[in-house]
Length: 329
Image 1: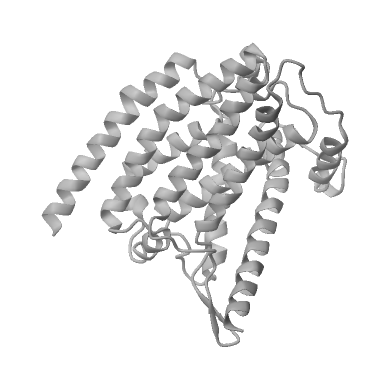
Image 2: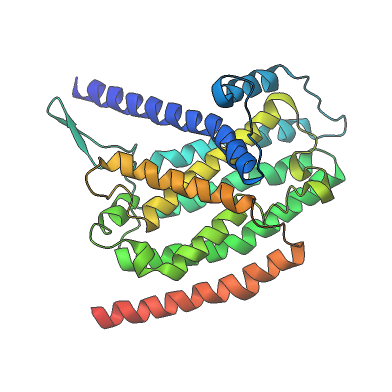
C-alpha cells in the first residue's frame, strides 16, 4: 500500500512538472515575440486571441499539419532520431530541478522536485551534453552541406563553452560542499552564490547562452550564412520538436541559474515555489532581452572568447576560490 502511494505521488509530480514545463515552452514563444516586438516598437502577436495569447496553439496546430519532407540523401533513422534526442534530454533535466522546499499535505511531506540526486550536478552536465548531440546528428544526417556545417559548429561550440561552464559550477560546488542541487540551494539560505561567486555567475550566463545557441552565439543556425543551419531540412513536427527543445533548454538553463546562483526558492514573504519562478522568468526575460540587443559574433570571435578569455577566467576563479576555502577552514 505504501509503495502504491509512493508511485502515485511520483506519477502526479511527474505529470505536473511535465505539464507546467510544456506550458512554459509553448507560451515562452509568445513571450519572446512580444518582448522582441516591443523592443523594436512593434506589438508582436495580436491576431489570435486577446493580445495574441492563443498564438502558440495556432502555431502548434500549423506545425503538426504541415507537409513533412525528408531529403532522399538523408540518413533517415538518424534524421528522425535527432529531434527526439533534443527534446528528451531537455525534459529529462527537469527531474533534478528543485522547484521549492518540502510541503506537508494530509500529514505527508511532499518534496517539490522529482528526486534529489547526490550527484545532481554531474547528471545535469551529462544529460545537457547528450542533448547537444540532437543538433549535431540532425545537421549531419540531413545530407545538406549547410546542415553539416551547422552541426560541426555546434559540436565545436559545445566543447569550447562546456569547459568554462563546468569550471563555473566547480567553484560553486567548492563553496557548497555538495553536488546535490537541493544541498546547493539550502547552502544559500543566508547568502546567495551570486554574491559569493560573481565571476562564476557571469561565466555561467555567457556559457549557457552559447550552449543554448542564443544570439550572439547562434553559430549553428546563423540564418544569413547557413540558411538555418543544422535544422535546415526539417519540417512539420520534427522542426517543432527542435523548436520546443530549444525553449525547454532555455527554461532549464534559467532554472539552473536560479538554483546555483540566485538562492533557488529562498525569498521573503512569498512561498518558495513562487520565488523560484519569479527568478526563473527574470532570467528568461534576460535571455530574450540580450537577443534583441547584441549582434551575432563572427565564428572566430566566438572561439577566441571561449578559449582565450572564459577558460583562463574560470581557472583563475577556481584558484582564488580554493585559496579562500583553505584560509577559512
